[in-house]
Image 1: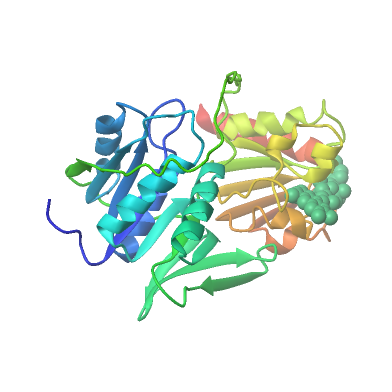
Image 2: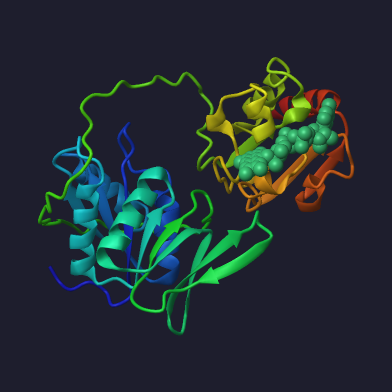
Length: 327
Ligand code: FAD
């Protein structure tokens, strides 16, 4: 197969356990297309490659390399081996990986092994006259900074949901990637139990809309109001750490410095004061709506729309107004 484009951006695409590419795939390929020619590396479970390669091309990958990860019980090393082989083959200007748990693990290991620079948790990428640069939102969103490597092509992990750009769909050009497995030591999964999630709501990471509740909700029972508004909007449910610590909702819903970082189109904060540690995880949301009874709460400093009022009075009215619009 012919050489790869000189401005190739290698976009690493993991797969979901339920099948299909990870949700971040469209944004990663959109980011790749904005700064070069996106070439996808699909880390596929055995025999899943063809369908996933087509999905990557539909999302804008100009070329697709499929790495068949033969042993899914081995953690991490196979992905690093595959990425090393793909990077050698493609010689990209940058490598984009989702800032998910798996993505961070892969990016860190590969950057250390290949001695490449790493830019973590980017909310955007661009090119200047010297190469690819990454944009970051840091210190609780108080500063926007740009990082660039002093040598070589960077490995960039991209925050899920942060990229709006989408690439144009391409016709499929794919090849199976030949990987020399390193057999380096790795943790292995001996057994696992699948945890059934009963929620019909979107997953918090990467959700387009998030409704989050804080200590202002007052109790676990009253926190149900957050879920009601979330369901009306088709949103995921988030929470402040104070709400989690008070036992209103499990920690997996915590947004912020020590929780999940989100970049949704819409973030609705109910009874949340807007502490810097909370803002660190949601300040890059495109539109922020805050409802808080204290007009001096710092959440209003970053809100696009704010309502000073009691959530227990405002939110039921909001829900019925939204419901009546649906009719
Ligand atoms: P509060 O600050 O108590 O605010 C409650 C708000 O509800 C108030 O503004 C009040 O006016 C309003 N309110 C009360 N009743 C009503 C009502 N009926 N109607 C409307 N409004 C009402 N926090 C996070 O969220 N995420 C993190 O990841 C995180 N990591 C941290 C890491 C470290 C190292 C530290 C030190 C702290 C961290 N925190 C984090 C905690 C953070 O500092 C705040 O304590 C926390 O975010 C506060 O949560 P809150 O806004 O729900 O509670």
